[in-house]
Image (tube, rainbow, N blue to C red; front, side, top):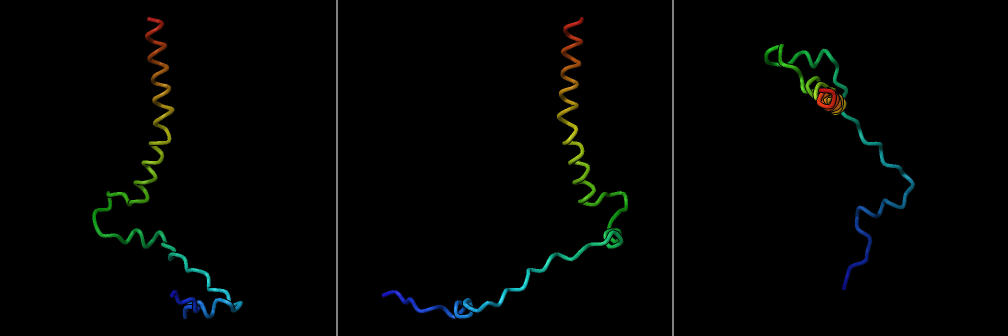
Length: 77
């Protein structure tokens, strides 16, 4: 037969006590990021990710504009 008795962790579930909120990650300050090891000319991961996002955001419009310009040049000449 299957044991249907409440498990030990379920005994306190009927009480109205709320569980504490989960903790958040510690906040990193800019000064702490500058204390990294290695050459200063290497960008941090956050800076590199921001640059990739900016490049990818503008890649589509630039490709569309270049295609339209090439098509216009090809039709006119």
